[in-house]
Image (tube, rainbow, N blue to C red):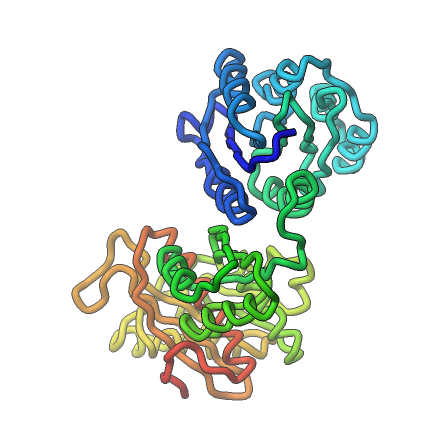
Length: 417
């Protein structure tokens, strides 16, 4: 295998070319590989075409030491990755009984089509990469001087597989940072451009970084240098952006709120308007959420706010549904209507319509109220698409709830009662 750290990323699938599915893999993988010292020569998308796949793979093997292929590991005839890699390596496909048994176990007794047997195939001599989050294992091996790594297409499968299996494989094959040389962190409520600017401003000699953008956070890593230098880097970053926004370790907003609820032996109730149940989704995405999440109300129309959680008509008439008074009443009403100790409420204008001069699109009010009394309200002016505003609102609301439970300041909020 060649020793230089050059890489090519190939994303396979006609659905990517046609825009049916958004390809986020090149961005994620390029960031991770760059932080490990690789020079990513290019990333490309190819359709489910034997001719184009064969040429793309041959070109990549000729110019790079590492070729990562994403997608094309499904059970159908247009999933070509196994066949194309086997063809490039000049070997047949080999059936792996252990992969087939793992697939059958995942289906838990349900009928499995014979077409799924394809997912237990890999080029002969290549080693499998386990996939606890899906049915298709990845695989790796060499073609000429290049290391080939094939990963499944769904991000929920690819990203854990890369972190758990591929990174150790690359460190072993090419050398580089060990896990002890990496400090992991999470950025919350920080635009990617602002995080990059802050990372550059706080950088220390000998330390590189990589970022990974996800829908509710940005994961980042600080690699290399002495542990004290990485700690100092993280400390400077935290001071610059705030302890609410920067956390050590890879974590999610819902995890942080869950941990705070567990620490206070409390449960959460949500009253969501513009977020439409998104906070509830994030909370219940976590295993064991029934310990801390009582339930929620999607109080979208004004009638639902009054009928479900007791917001007074007068509050809505005088101040409107997107107001400090409304979200405070929503949070307190949700607590009163539930068995929870903490209530979180969100109401805003996610757009693209509905904004006014006084309350433009992106105006979002939120509140966190305690059963024992008191709470905090906060207004944000978010930018972006409707989806972005809703996601940012949900993240901010969960962090507000965490702060109220733990008695911490939340950004520069002073709106307490």
